[in-house]
Amino acid sequence: MFAILEWVLILIQVVPYIVMAASVITALTPTPADDKWVAKAYKLLEYCALVIGKAKQLAPEAQKKDTK
Image (cartoon, rainbow, N blue to C red; front, side, top):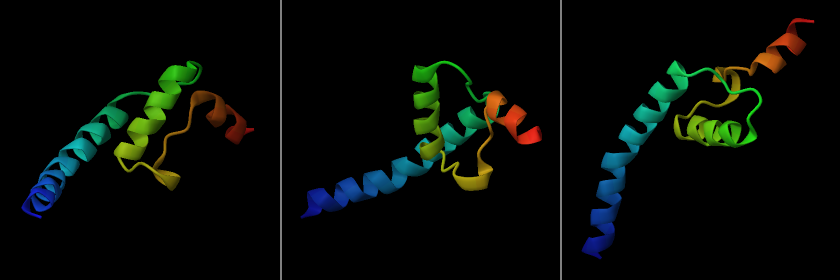
């Protein structure tokens, strides 16, 4: 029983650092446009950073379509 509580406490301590690091990386890097592997990794990174909905940065191709 105590082992489960220890794991929960560790997760509570580690998760904010994961979110913070992912947020910094997604804020400092441009959105990948063409490389499928990088785009998938970036999408996972966005989920870790809690970048969802209207907070997302559009890829360059999507920005061109929205301005027309």
